[in-house]
Structures are given as C-alpha cells and as structure tokens.
Amino acid sequence: FLLLQLLYEQHGVSLRASFIFLSVCSIWHLVRTFLLMPWGHIPYPLPHNYSYGLCSRFKTTKGEEKAVECVEEGLQSKEFSPKEETPGTGPQQEPRSFWSCVLSLRFVCHLVWLSVIQLWHYFFIGTLNPKLTSLANKDKLLVSTYTNAFAYTQLFGVLCAPWNGLLMDWLKQKYQKEAGKTGFSASVVALCSTVPSLALTSLLCLGFAICASVPVLPLQYVTFILQVISRSFLYGGNAAFLILAFPSEHFGKLYGLVMALSAVVSLLQFPLFILIKSHFQNNPFYVNLILIVATLLTLVHPFLVYRECHAQKESPSAKKKEDRAEHGDSHL
Image (tube, rainbow, N blue to C red; front, side, top):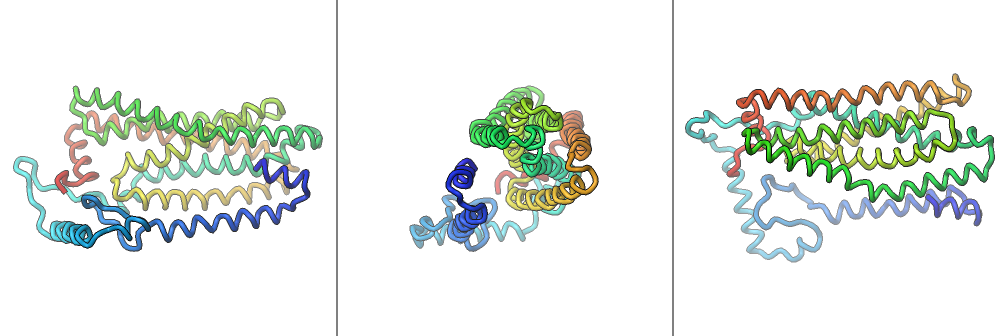
C-alpha cells in the first residue's frame, strides 16, 4: 500500500496500472493451487506416510503407492462393512455429515459472527479516505499523514496474529488439566477454549467501531490499532473455531463455505456506500450506529457456545455421544 501510494503521489504512476500489476501477481495463487494440491481426493483418515504436492508426487516410489492403495482399499472395505459393536457401549454412532454441520446452530451463529465483523472492517476501509478528508478539513498533507499511519499499523498484523492462538492454547491446556480431574471429553475442552477468543474478538471490534464513529481526528490512531488487532484475531479465531468445533475431515469444506458466504455478505458495503451518499449527505454516522448494534449482537455467538459447553459438562452421557459422533472410531 505504501509503495503504491509513493508511486502515485511522487512518480505519477496511475492507479489503474498499479491495480493491473497486482492482478497479474495474483495469478501465482491460481498456479500454486493447481500445482500444489493433489489432483484426486485426499483420503480420510490419512494413510501412513501419505504426501502430496509436485515434488512428493515425482519422488513417490511404486512400493509406497501400492501401500497407499492397500490402505485405501482397507478403509473402503471398513466403510462398507457392518459396523462392529463395542461391548458395553452399544452400537457406534456414525460421524457427523457435512450438511449436518452446515445446518447446525453452531455453524450459523459462527457465520453471522464472522460476516458482521468482516463487513465492519471492509466498510471502514471503504470510507476511510472520505472520513479523514472531512475530519482534516480537506488538508491533503494531514490526510496523507493519517493514511500512512493506517498503512504502518497494518504491518503489525503479523505480530498480533499469534496472540489469539496463544490464548486458545493456554486455555485449552488449562481446561485439559481440569478435564483430567472431572472426566470431561476432549471435544468439550476444545470448545470451551474458543469462548474467550470469540468474545474478545467481538469486544475488540466493538471498541474499534465506537472509536471509528467518533468524529475526532487524533482518536483515529487508536482506531487503527484496534482495527489491526481485531482483524488478526478474526481470521485466526475463525479457522481455530472451525477445526475445534467440527469434525476435522470437514474443515476444508466448512472453511471454504464460511469464507465464501461471508464474502457475499460483505457486498452489502456497496449499498451502504450508496445510502450514505444519497440520504445522509456523506455522513456515515447513522450507518455506523447500525453496524455497532450488529456488532453487539455478535456477542450472542460466544454466549451460546458457552451455554452449550456448560450443558455438556452437566450431561456426561451427551458429551460421550458427541465425541463418538465427531471423531468416529479411534482405531480407524
């Protein structure tokens, strides 16, 4: 961003040329997708010594390929054979299907949580320059100073990203020690560790939204800091919640679906831009107020997850059934 701004302001490079250059660079992501990922289906559970990618595909020996095929055939035969019953536990339950995860209240709430917070971030970036111009009384030098400050804070997103993961790992270890004494299942422990992360992400976004709505120019420095921390917590927490709250074999599909649907919701920023220009005389205050209320509602998601964890802790039989449903037979 800083490089593009420098080229535009001091060297006269047009924004169109810069965007075309960035689009050409994005082709690498498509090339990597076709060359890195396997051409066929990745088996689950993953066979021993399974690997994929361009280099591993050329280096795989015939013996290794035959071993993988044997493992896959064994898995298929187990999949279509009658399910064995474990003495004293009754029939083993089927793992949760992909659509049962998608249609669950847990997934729907998480989708709303991600979509609202992500919409706030996109809307803020889209209205940043007009807002800074208005607050700085059209002083281009002052606007450029604050724009540079915003760009510099984005660089610290790399440093902020691990904080959420460290928080969740610490909580998970803490709950695992308690689970060893109380006998709670691993799925309940993993789910409980996501609650503070979800709540903290919502609160960070709420603080960032309130600061962004206050028409005080120096306060925008605080807004920039809260925005980059909130964004770092958002995407890391999203992936962590999906892998801890749902069966791991559905992670890729659920992650792709939630990102696609939240991107569709983010398109609402364009009607909001039109609404601000046509009805509010370029004053985003009322739209900001609506989005702040929506951000408050995202706190419902961690509350429901907490209530679900509390209910599972009080029902040992229910938590054992969920473990079997989510993870399947441990010997597969």
